Length: 156
Image 1: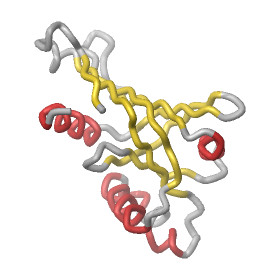
Image 2 (image 1 turned 180 degrees about the horizontal axis):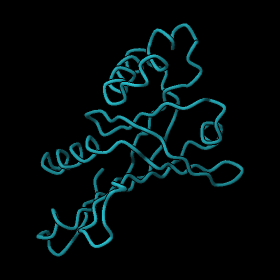
Image 3 (image 1 turned 45 degrees about the vertical axis):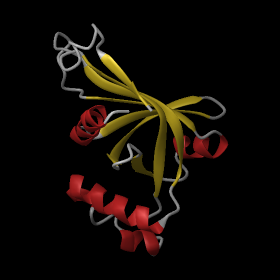
């Protein structure tokens, strides 16, 4: 992936907050989570380990995700992202600490509940999960209109 496309993708991920994520266990399931992203295009979210999607990830860590601005008008040029990859509970304390700090920057109302002190003391029952993309499709009908009549780029 070239650096220009990676920057476009990072900017888009940074401009959005909600991600729809599909999982598969005994049945298909979809959930919507708030996320943060890192410089390597990994996505992180917080969920209770007993939630349907967290339980599915124990059985099958493959996920499909979609991110789009829900305020887009139907007549406007379409912008969004789809990906597939794997998701797992994050175990690295340094990464968890970073993620919670970033999460609280984006969602300040969550500081009292989702913080590293509560995580370490187990007062916070939710866990940090990491989505590692294997393929990302970013589409932007306005920005990519001059790319050989394509509206999208595939990354990774």
